Length: 247
Ligand SMILES: CC(C)(COP(=O)(O)OP(=O)(O)OC[C@H]1O[C@@H](n2cnc3c(N)ncnc32)[C@H](O)[C@@H]1OP(=O)(O)O)[C@@H](O)C(=O)NCCC(=O)NCCS
Image 1 (cartoon, rainbow, N blue to C red):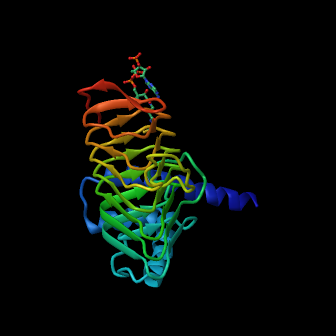
Image 2: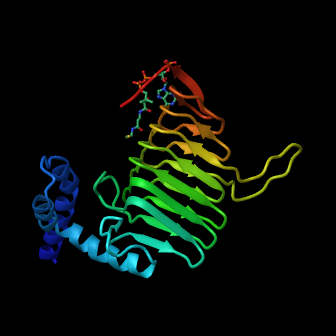
Image 3: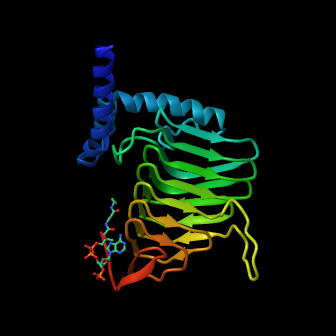
């Protein structure tokens, strides 16, 4: 039992350092890449697991890095759905954060579309559901850290180089309907621009458009549109500072 625990811990640590080591790779030769991969057994397990996922769901089996799903995570594409990956999609690995030990889940229902443009990573515990009629587009350089939830039932686009922190919820539907005069639809599209940093445990609600270069403070509840280059926070979120930038 203890030997098994030691092996598991070794695998976990090697995986955590994988991305760091990869960043430090000055010369991107195939030989160096191969050495990195063989030094990190979890990555090999993930590649094998992902090969079968790509095979089952009709994705390109000759592009090993097109879809890499952590072996503890799930990627499910129901018949009648569309998954278009024009780049690389990393699901559930501890490459970006070690802050959760839960498995990630990506579920694309029939009549739903998931589009990945460029390189996108989602961390452990992240739940992404694209419901029937939903179209979710995630763009290059965006990452979602631990335990965030994205529920898409209409049109949702998240721009380039966005950082979505742990515990964040982005939901474009209320799931239930309430009635009153002037009530709008209970599901409406969400658009998040480029270079948006969403602090931990924030909630982005239906119908919201967030412009480029915005910071959302931890715990904010965003239910109205936000212009570019601002810091917003609170419940409901209000503009706290203008003319900001972040890196
Ligand atoms: C948004 C944030 C980065 C701002 O930090 P900062 O630039 O140092 O700002 P300050 O702490 O000086 O706060 C500036 C103002 O915003 C307000 N504010 C800060 N965080 C807030 C929050 N979460 N909710 C509401 N208001 C907040 C402050 O009260 C202050 O208001 P005031 O000017 O009226 O006094 C920081 O508060 C935050 O939320 N950090 C968490 C980031 C995170 O989730 N990281 C996860 C890993 S990516």
